[in-house]
Image (cartoon, rainbow, N blue to C red; front, side, top):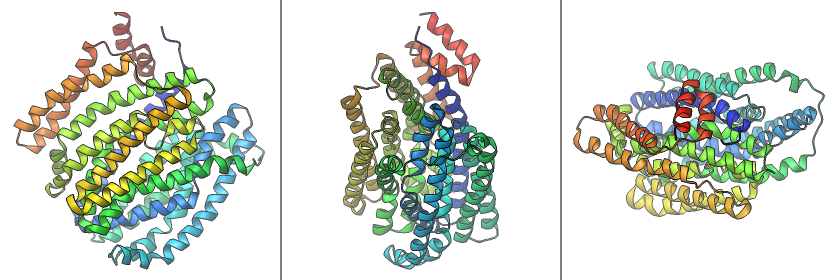
Amino acid sequence: MTEHDEGVSTLAKQGSITFVGNVVNGILGFAIVMLMTRFVSPSVYGLFVLATSVILFMQVFANLGLPLAIDYFVPQYLDEDEHGKAKGVIVQVTATVLVTSSIIAFVLASSAAFIGEFFQEPSMQIALLFLSITVPMLAIYNVLLTSYYSIKKLQYRVIMRDLVRPIVRFTVTAGLLLVGYGLLGLIVGYIVGLFVAITIGAAIFTYKAWDLLSTKLELVAPRPLVTYSVPLAMTSVVFVLMGHVDYFVLGFFLDSDDVGIYRVGYMLGSGLMIIFNSLSPVFKPLIAESRDDLELVERRFRIMARWIAGITLPITIVLSLGASSYLAVLYTPQYAEANAVVALLAGAFLFNVTFGGPDGSLLQGLGYSRYVFANTLALFGVNFLVSMVLVPIVGIEGAAIGSAAALFLVGTLTLIELYYLDRLHPFTKDFAKIVAAGVPATIAGAPIVLVVDSDLVVAAVLPIVVIGTYVLTLIATDAFTDADAQMAAEFSPTLEKWLSVGLFGR
């Protein structure tokens, strides 16, 4: 019997909370985009995507990566019962990012006309003038998120990020679009949703973490914060740019409607990151607090890799096979031309998140922030160069190939670095069973797409066939472990009992 690891229970318990939040957030996010694509043209939606991409890119410079220091240092100070220093980290980071983000917001507003001319989209000037006020708002928003991560109270992060913000944004956006406000409706919905989320999130954090916030403040030496954060700040710059470079390149070479169509395909293809995004916020602090025990770190890494791969793989198969149908049903038929984008990105994200994630959360937890920066630099470089070469030739598929190539490269680099630095790897016989189960699932799902003509029928039947075949294959190959039963206990006692019966019946 495998040794009971409380970290696995914490990972599952908090991960299940964030998973529910991510599902709700994902549904609302898709609903918002479905709303936008039906009330505004692809060109207006593409213009909004370009403007928000500029905001998110500039916001990284505004916070200097400092929020990432919160969920690295605060868990360590709390573990050592130094609550004053834990508070000091939060206070110092908050004060710093408020100043820097306000400066960046002013610079962005001043240069809005130039940016609009660069992309040959005059309307971007108005959009950026309104959206510039969100730069300091996003900085505080990120401080609140990482503060929740640091105290492992992710249910409150779920309230702020996954419930309040998308619900308010959807409601305001829908109301304004219905009365014909178009682009302005999209902008105001974005701003109001963020403002209300920050207000409620700050109130909840103050109430729930009052013991921490009311303790005597002890300022910490700024150098360790900066030393840890600056490489990650540069990482964030490159990573966010990588996440939006596709839109910048497409906006430069093609029209704004191509940006809108690609954005829908990218969103659907990257939607399978929901499992990684559910476990990653608590995974990094768990690794940070146990980074000196490499055996424990590897055990936790292998469990997380198996669960991410096991849940994400069948979703990847469904999205890759049925991309055209899902794009046509969820949005409108004109967006179905992004089907190759969905398939390429789904496979690339599956590979990348299984082996450490696009943000290098495992390397971050182990303290290797410089390696994360180097990886992200490679991520951006490959994506940018490949996209610049291919977009003028093959259009939006060129941007997808660039992103996919970069994600595969960085996933491979992460594996090599983890083994080189600490001899860590996720590959076991149990992991191989998880991957192999995807073969019969793909074989079972392919005829559905080839034979059935109705997009609606394909969208409904394909996941049943693929996921059903996948689960049956896992059962047939006896792929479940003791750690799976422990993880399952935090999701469902019934599921744990079922898995345990299977385990002990070996």
